[in-house]
Image 1 (cartoon, one colour):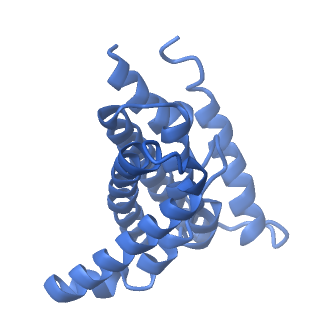
Image 2 (tube, helix red, strand yellow; image 1 turned 45 degrees about the vertical axis):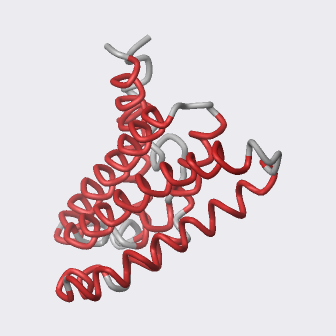
Length: 192
């Protein structure tokens, strides 16, 4: 496999940000009560995550490193993420009111999604090139969306299942999340 392929598969499956890195657990547990909201949130996060990683990479290597201001990276990355979410929200409101209404409540939540900040920081700390950063971000975003959709569909099925009262709701969701995490651990070692 090529290096970019390994980066993509690594971020998508092996080091999945939700199930292996435990980033983005708030939307994972809070928004995945239905397949539709999980999918919409995953798509919106994918767009923001890819753009934030690329823009943060350009700012870091184009401005912060030459001016020796790398200690400002976290503050600047948070501003980039919040700005991107606001721009996307304004753009969707103007061009696609239906999509804006569908994603309306979930777009501001992306700003506080630690997976978005985590991907940008990990890409910088791993000294990835711009293309590698984009590949890493797309893999991470696709992995986030995959897990959100799978867990949303699973939770829809669990709502219809007859469970003992002690397991209904949050307990079975946490058990299911743990089992999904164990299943994704099976991907460890791919590419080595």
